[in-house]
Amino acid sequence: MSSDLVIVYHRQPYEEVEENGETVLREHKSPNGIVPTLKSFFGKVDHGSWVAWKLAKDANDPGWEPRIEVEDSFGSYSVSRLPLTQKQVHEFYHVSSKEAFWPILHSFKDRYNYDPVDWPNFREVNWRFAEAAAAEAAEGALVWVHDYNLWLVPGYLRQMRPDVKIAFFHHTPFPAPDMFNVLPWRKEIIESLMECDSVGFHIPRYATNFAAVVQSLMDVDIAKRERVPNDLIAEGTALTERRVPTVLSGPSRDVHLSVAPVGVDVDYIQARAAEESTKTKAEDILNDLGDRQLILSVGRTDYTKGGIEQLGSFERLLEDRPELRGKVQLMHVSVSANRGMAAYGEIQSAIEEAAGRINGRFGSLDWQPITLVSRAIPFKDLVSYYRAASVAWITPLADGMNLVAKEFIASRIDGDGALVLSEFAGAAVELGAAVATNPFSNRSMDVAIGQALDMSETERRDRMKSMQQAVRRYDLSSWGQSVEDLIPSKHRNAA
Image (cartoon, rainbow, N blue to C red; front, side, top):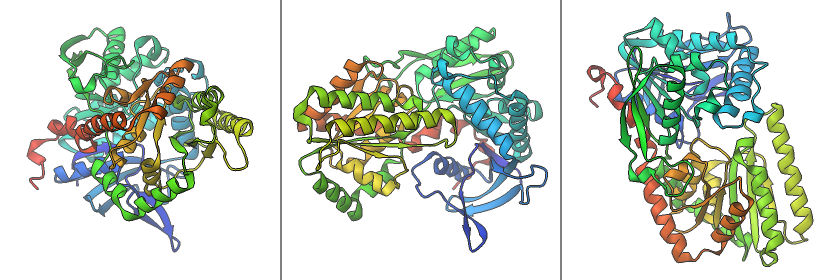
């Protein structure tokens, strides 16, 4: 059965688990995430499809059905699973995407390495994604492609199916031309994206950068600019824009640029925060802390996340303010998302070394300044820590959005708590009431964490109220509205 909406994403829309020797499909444990939100759009059409990859020993004979029908709480939909070998995944995702694209997207030119990139493999994988999407799409359907590792899909798909509408969303930052154009495949990528009907970004700065890149590579006019709404302008922060291009007049079509900050499921998080078990665990954490203030930092082990710089700031805090020794506790959660990759292993080792040094310098028999956690914390437990923390310390060097900051805010049903947030996280343009900091400046980092720890309850509550309004305004349900108009109206599910 052909589909009116085809979502193309590298992850499958469920978790595969083994039960009694059989593979069972389960919905993701936390409904607070991108995958459940994307699946919710299937309820707007008569039939939907999802295209993803699945690991196979032999891509030609994977030993499982490439296409299956799934029925879960979101309804019935098809899943087209592309069999990729371990080598293909390594070349396509770990090398091309993570060693070449990721550092450029986050403006870390010194970590960029395109020498090992197998570009023909990247093209082949993207072509296969496009083929699968083309096979699933009904006449005039919307194909919604997600993230930079599928950059070439729109161009290939337009060749195969000129009738469909194509939307693309970037879940990362998008850099200016002097950074993006380091990529030797820049024009091929941009020509593909210019075959879309809509290209989406988290914040106006990324859309502005994209338009500049396009104009550096193609003879394209900006057909329309609009004023950025006030709720996406945080005065004095690094990523703020005043006007944003919204339509590019391309060689074959007008391409609409949409700005849609991804959010969190506020109602879900607040419901978890209000549960008695969450409250009890938060009270237990506070009892263990005694009169100490908990500073909570949560992120992935990645050079973009600024973990080492943050630990350096904490060390200086303890040096410069001896009265805080024994009075603050930093819980630093740094979870590896790409095990086995050398760059991330180096970061993890550096974080462990810094934490060990700080604990050795300042710790005592009854107090360790840093609790370092290198594994993922179940979300229900994480909400308890959000509720117990005096300060959430979120200071990436670059980040497309940062949902941890929004989760913390949504969790604070008590209306208290302080947030220190990097100017270079996309969320900073929404959260003007956070304590903004520049993670490239020692002084800025040190002043910000000190300000948050010293903040009066009245100021904390005033700031938190403003931030909660912002998180509610751009919640997870509002994020996908930018593509609603592209869904074929004749196929929309009236229910």
